[in-house]
Length: 239
Image 1 (cartoon, rainbow, N blue to C red):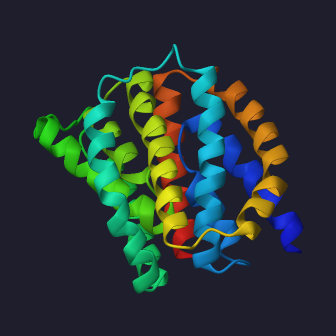
Image 2 (image 1 turned 135 degrees about the vertical axis):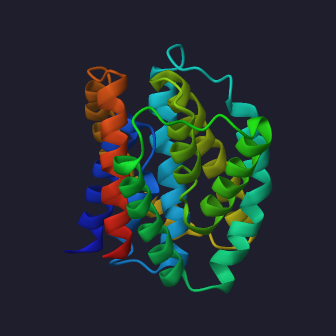
Image 3 (image 1 turned 90 degrees about the vertical axis):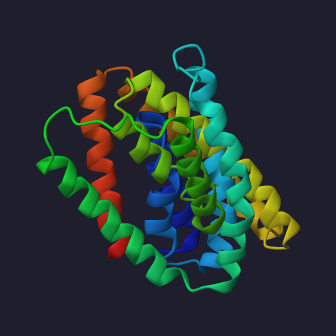
């Protein structure tokens, strides 16, 4: 399939997932785009598209989400982005993606065997900050900033509005910081913006469809959808 079709197709699917679940842009885009675009070229485009995908849902849902837990995640995440961007240039992404993929699959297995209602309450703001730092590193390395806070918010057992009020604006902030850092490193060029223009119409359509689905989800269905997306993402990263 020509790259002119692969880019809008990936953008449509990723925007739908982001609008419905609040994260997953880099996981979906990476699974599709890494097949035809070199990671060093794909990651700046993933970050730019990811930023666009998070803006529209956050504007639409701005009064429905709970942002009370966000600040500590965001501050620590910003500190992690430079390290992730450095890793992007200096290490091979293949083994890293495999490790993340297997971790996600094992996590889902753990969720299904752990006692019902188990949640993590220890660690407080310090633990939240470490998770935010990990999210920033993953964001700078591969645009995967949403994985760590999404898993952690689920373990904290916050309600749907509280979970999404952490990891979706966190992804938006990390994408903005990561894109600025990659630009400073010279990894963003005119081709990045040209390909972004190819993707924008598909992002708009996918976002509209995803928000329609989100409105129909209660907390239980939302959690099931997130777990299913995490499992599919892990498999996609391995395959």
